[in-house]
Each structure stands twice: as C-alpha cells, then as structure tokens.
Image 1 (cartoon, rainbow, N blue to C red):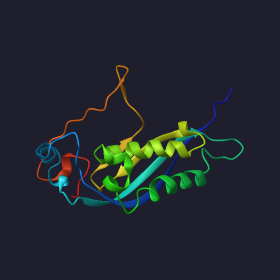
Image 2 (image 1 turned 120 degrees about the vertical axis):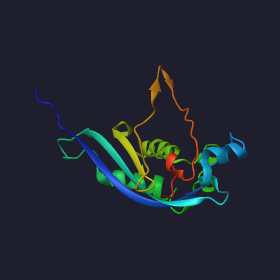
Image 3 (image 1 turned 90 degrees about the vertical axis):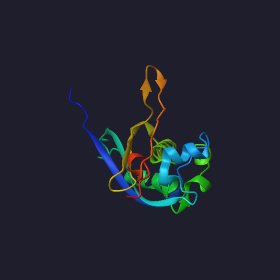
Image 4 (image 1 turned 30 degrees about the vertical axis):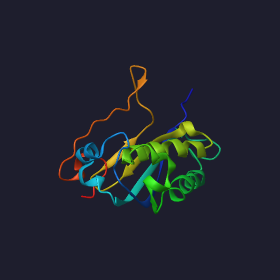
Length: 168
C-alpha cells in the first residue's frame, strides 16, 4: 500500500494597516510601560506581508492540495476587504477589546480564513511579516496541560523590537 503524497501550498499577500498597541485591560501608565513608543496615541502603520500555508494530500484527480483560487478568494475576503488600508483598532471589531498585536492579528486571520475554506483543517500556518525583522508564525491554538495558554508578559524598551509591532 503506497502512501498518498502530502504537500504544502503557500500564498503570499501584502496589505497596509495602522494600529496603536494599547490594552483596555491596562492603565495608561501600564500601556506605556509595556508597549513604549508603539502606544503612541495616534498609532502607526505597517506594510504587512502575510503567508498562508495549507498542508494536505495531493488530490489524485486534480493534482492539487487546494485549488489556489479558493485560497486567493479567502485572502481577498478576510485580508484585503477587512484589513487593507484600515485602522485595526477602529475598523475591525475583533480588536475593540484586545490589543492589535501581530500575534492577535495572526489569530484573527487564522480563525477567519478557516471559515472561508471548504476544508479548514488543511490550514497549516499563518505567517505575518510585520517588518523585515519581526515575523509572527501561528499554527492554531496551543494547549498546555489541557488548557489554552494565552498569557504573555512584555516589557518595553526604547524601540519596539521586543514586541510584535516594530517600526525599526
């Protein structure tokens, strides 16, 4: 019995958006301490590059893991229409109560792309290049001892290089 070949298919897209790193769960002083200059009241922008990767068996009939048009349409709906040239904090309801970090942006994209795919289980990875130096990779929820781990403590420095949003 031969095994069916498995392949990874990645589609890349770029979009521009602005945001302010600010958590409603922290005081203004705590936000400044945690996010530093990225907590600027007026925010800042990025030209994001997103790579979406699906992983699965190569269909013997079509020779594809997923029809690239399906992936392209999902990206158009979730990323280009909802995020491109938007203020993430003000225009995307998802970020009304959570910080618009690149980590949370990756979760948003993951969750919403899955709703657009005929086989959501094939989504393998969302990778976001916020800057050439800051890259976030998300592969779905992480379980630690049966519980989801979403605690992340950060400390700000003079630049945002220690946190996901970096204008360097």
